[in-house]
Length: 174
Image (cartoon, rainbow, N blue to C red):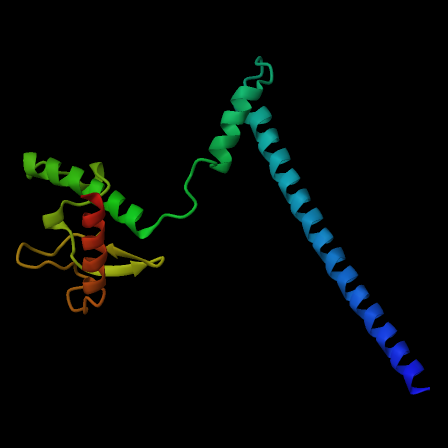
């Protein structure tokens, strides 16, 4: 008698496991269907905007131009993750361009024309932004100071780590 009851309990356990698996697959199917419908909605909206506002009224629908438009809208070529080294390289390139312009004519240097300040005019405070060490983008107060108004009384706690990252970057460049 006990053996029959144990077999029935085992059968019930198997049935409950199968029903749980079926519920999760139903949920997964619902999620994939929802994602497909969102993607379809995105595509329909983009196509409507292209046809209604971008395409000329006399122009025939051109798939090549539409593909270029899709690449621009959905940014397929844009890098998804920018590493610390890439971020540092971009910042250093922008600062180098600003340094050259400032060295040529310091009196007529305009900050709005460049993506960065020159090194001697830039705050040396290191901050952590999106898990990357970055140098503060603000200008310094005066020639004697190397900090901006926000960081003049702050402790530069990431300076050593930034220096290590910078040294590793320089070694890789060589």
